[in-house]
Length: 117
Image 1 (cartoon, rainbow, N blue to C red):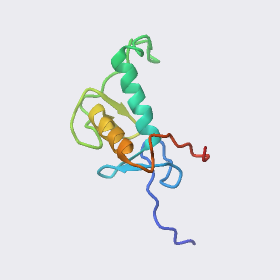
Image 2 (image 1 turned 135 degrees about the horizontal axis):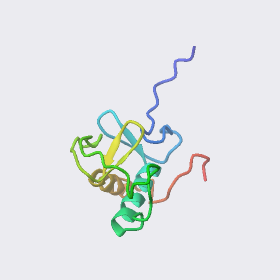
Image 3 (image 1 turned 45 degrees about the vertical axis):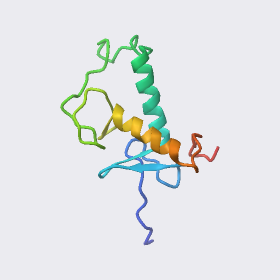
Image 4 (image 1 turned 30 degrees about the horizontal axis):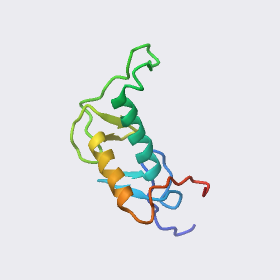
């Protein structure tokens, strides 16, 4: 049995800290730079109306909101959030994560893929 130290991983995509450029910690949750960029893009498209034409599997015009579930990062109950498998992140926390990534000189605003590109 190997005594490998525990490695933190993104709660949204399960990539570990060695597979991403940056991992941002919340209270018992993590989000990587790739998921932050994806969430930010979704919020931008949602605010611009670019996603209004999409329908859910049930034929509803938009996915049902989950206002009773708090953001896994700030604990606030907000209507604007994105769901992971077992976690949620609100638009304010995504914006804060975007700022953290942008302020990191090692990241320099470049996305990082798991295969090293």
